[in-house]
Length: 315
Image (cartoon, rainbow, N blue to C red):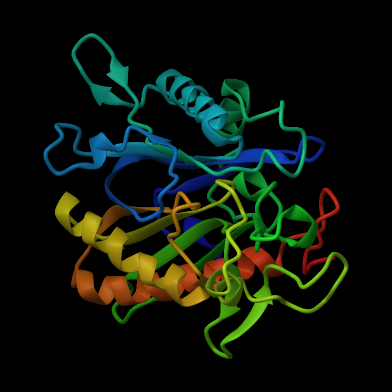
């Protein structure tokens, strides 16, 4: 399995700045995808979410952009729109085709160079680099500056990144997830219930402090420096309402794998994309999506390399 690009019609591209420790990830669906979203975090940063409403005239999106750089990183989506316009892709208005490109950001300003963020040019480069090949995971794209377990600050956090995973249902229906995991909380393996990446008891320590326990004890650090961004895609045919439900159900994967999740200091958003004509019940797709998201989050931390002095499981 290649990850999100297992879904026909999807290409994924990263642009990474390893010096500034930031980047962006572009999910291209130039042929158009029916889409929905679900926002659970209290500190989100996004644009063009309204186009995903069942009440909006735009029936399809042409890309999703995930970016570091906090709100500054929203600029990357402009480069993706420019790239798609040059390809003749977009919503036909009569006078021009306008690419529909929802985007969301995560906060990574605390690990690298806070004054260097993803730009329009970086977004365009990520779109130009997008392929249908295997998706690069770990410290790449929007996950370049991602970290986990920040309630005691960056010195006791761990590196995270981008992960992706595909689940196949009977009959050839696929559900895949790509996650840029940058949570305040710890990442837990649902199979064991144990923390595998998160806040440590002290800088340099290999022991985990337990973010949920720290919160119950009154610790209130972490600031608004977090967010887990999820994109799930399927080759099943869905309406906008069903895509919205799929986005909601996919968030169960984050709930199983991140503790705590959806806090007031996280900006967690899930997008769902429907491409193809396969038939499947949305509830079954939701079960698969939650599994895919959970596994993608685990891969995001397992594949993450040490950057900016923040230790990663991949060394």
